[in-house]
Image 1 (cartoon, rainbow, N blue to C red):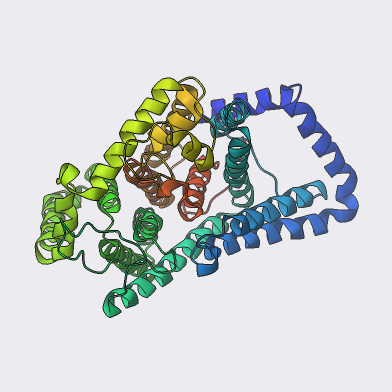
Image 2: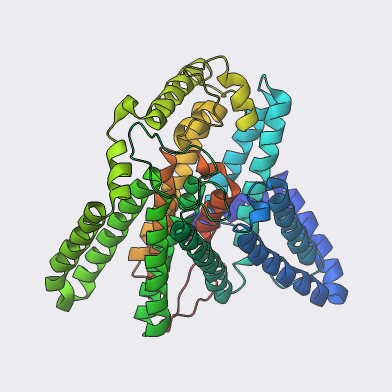
Length: 469
């Protein structure tokens, strides 16, 4: 079924008067240049992949904590090199995916909403960011389609970056680093404890960076276990433990919720798979679940900071952070009600200009603190429906790949499960926070979407053969 959809989309795209014509022109240029510049083109495409690795390393560097322009330039440089390499006859090519349809639709609705916005200049700035992020999707699917090793390399690059930030966070926790802003409500929490933020200056942002890495590391641990490579499997488990501990030390309540949700989702999928395929371990599954529940209960019981942060979720308006979010949600719902068709415009600058007309609290807001509500406010009902369909289709394809018996993904099914868990965790965290739109988090989202969107066809020994259908 998936293969038929891919074939239909590729034929439709190539028969399009506009897009098909552009693609044909590019192919024509490539064929003319290939005999003399093919090697140069392949080299440029490999360089584009190295720049993608540099992008994911840069996400944790302090100089890029607030430098969105620098990360955008890195992304655009990689896009330029890959396209130039393609035109010069490089060996790598990007196959079309049915997920491209919704990604392009998301781009289209953002363009329409930006140019129809009352805040045109602010919306154009927001649209530029959207173009970079969606461009990264096409970039990631292009550079990671060429080789299965690249998919593992980019994931390990991201995880090692996370590990370095986690250790820096542990150092901050040990010395009791002072906060850079007022994150806690002292009227509810007894001092709040130390909240780590590493190089990112914000514990919620750091937690948003860590949260999707937990299911990815779990997926890699099961991938290596399936291949009987126990040393990297154990290393992935230890890395996962370090990330979970770092999330605890951030004190981010949204990340706590997302972590619990994605671990439940991951554990349920693995348990059902093990129940069907490994009858010998069935009797151990209840014990494993009980052990996990007991471990989580001990963490909450023994760590006062975790107790305080979880307890503050149920404080309602008695907690200033809760009250602030509720006020923003109410104002944002009113904004959506008045602009439900095409929204108020794209980006946080357009949001801030419109928010002043609906403000409930005495504080400014950078966003709605809820991803679906943010999209609804910026892009209207069409935008939130398209984004919902995109996330749903990505998770549906991951579900299909995990359970597919026809192509037999083998150990790679657990990598797919980890990526799906990462998308799920980002969506859960995004329901109560605004860090989803920060590049340190948003690039991870598009990486996960890109990897799931890739064509997967697995040999029994675990090597990937790129499916050109």
